[in-house]
Length: 376
Image (cartoon, rainbow, N blue to C red; front, side, top):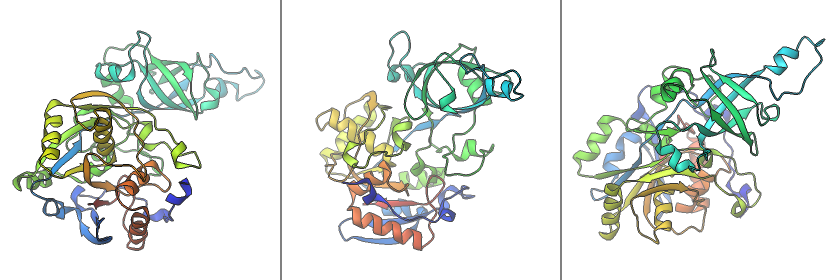
């Protein structure tokens, strides 16, 4: 398949720049895979749309303030003439860092093990301006240089491996100086209210650099309604990183490779999913990250969901045989993205793209702070 087959036209004004005043006020496009029909609804109808014997699975990851601003020390910068008044700014220029997940550390820990620790010091990151930041360069992040890091290795497309100097409380410092990593299609700076709004109400496990956006619509009241109907719920953890939002740069879908992302499944969740599948009940995933976590675990366990953690890199596109997930709540995704391909794998590609065109015509709000769809 060609990546161009997953394209669609989206007017810029339909990209949601702000969250709604109330989380649950979003619209919901309800897709039926069997009848190839859809219905325009409200997200608040979700509790009644779910079956009473469904198992609803959430991703409980928590977004960290992963966007950092600072300057470089200029240790590895190419020297410029002292007669040039811009020399100082060039050598000690501003930098922007987006942490995308813990990296392998010097003591041999892989990123999954590092994420389980309270203070991972080695991180993979996107650095701008990438071409000017070489190995050995030191970065001073925060207005007062509260965090300092050395560039240990270079990757592709601006990726770097950073090693942070130990501080008394890394997470508290990051919370103080870091910014909410809003996606680039939100054309504004982050604000204080984004710290709460770009986070699900059930977020627990710290580690994501982007929100699992399908979960942003839920409120405590909606969750109560779901439980009052007797619908069982469970949680997994997948820390959203580059694997989720990286662009597909190949022409052929099958040639694309996802970055690995840390996941964890508890014994309780593994048991609930196993029982639901054994009873013939439907597993409903809240978000594409939940889908990939469950399906990767099933693939790894030869069809069985087992408790454990690791790094998932499962790329789901049309032709994939789902072992666990029977329905999906998800936001609208970027054209030609791996997330859109996953939705097209669960439902027919032409049907999904037709539904997207309908959403555009009906002025749905797209992407992270936008509306959602239920595919069943």
